Image 1 (cartoon, rainbow, N blue to C red):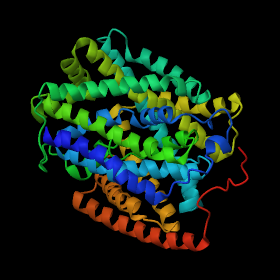
Image 2: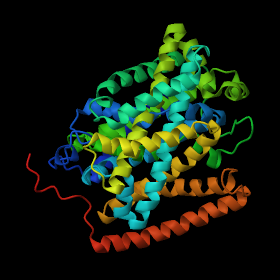
Image 3: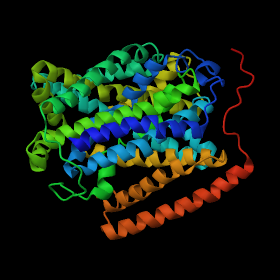
Image 4: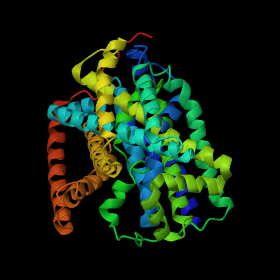
Length: 481
């Protein structure tokens, strides 16, 4: 288990070293009042404690990503561990921290507004469409996956569609009510259950001496699927996920002090990476090799792996708790996905959210569209979600790089992972059946050429933006506590 345990140790070390470096480089202004106070509205802008914000952030960003993604990514072998550790420390956690902190500096702005400010007004419309599409896909995926898991828990005695109805009802309530009424009260308990279930599986692996594979760069995928670029879309949450950029503004509007940012944004991404390591290790070690894992995935999907792993390692009762911990992940990301979509549309159309009726007429159509999307094949939704997700991550990293470039700070911390994923995003959509289905050699050429062109445009735009001396943050000097 050296690779598995060493990877978890590196994630923790990364928080205290690279996380501290990113925080220092960004430059915390702890005396600066945050949007929770400056823009207080009793609905979305409400000061909450660091522990509560941290647990909400973890549940917001996690979804089924750090469970289902690593389980499917385990088919590639220990290369999955490398991407989780390296991606989480140098890409995902940086992505989350920068989007969260830049949002705090700009009255809790969502990604479309930040893209408009730092990348140009045209990008506001592009990113707005991307973000709402991504959130709709996330919300829909995170309705069907927990419903299927709950149906499995009842051995099929209760149909999945019944759970779908109950989950939708909860989503409506959580989307329109003030953030501290449902999410703020329930999430600490949900977070505890999530952490207990993940730790239970992780400790179970160690106690039983599971034969987790050691580090190798060999591709073990039974069907020969290429690590590049597919692994980076199979494992997104747990390493790097653009969905997080849509979630951090929820907490940037409830954070009391800027110094809390590293714990809330960088730290919770590291925690998600540890959860991803645990489930990848469980999938690699418990099903008689990669062919056995592939067969179970084909027959019952990742949910079957979750149930089997939890039951074997934790027993019947513990296994049920373990599955419920995983069920909570998508539900507590689905509700905030719809909440984020409501907030983004409200900001885009400049509609105040104090009135309950305003929240309802924005959220209502979202739920109708999502209900229709639940009839689409899950695998198709998942593939489009993954591409939209990583495309959004690229945009968020480029927003962070632009902010740091204008501020004359180390923008490479965002630009390098952003450029790497840009190559993967272009190559993926060119090569896959859901895109242009081109041969891989043409797709790779297109990926590198397209990424090079966009990076050149970035530097050209960055120099112009710096010359304009645009304000990096909203002026709050007139705020009186």
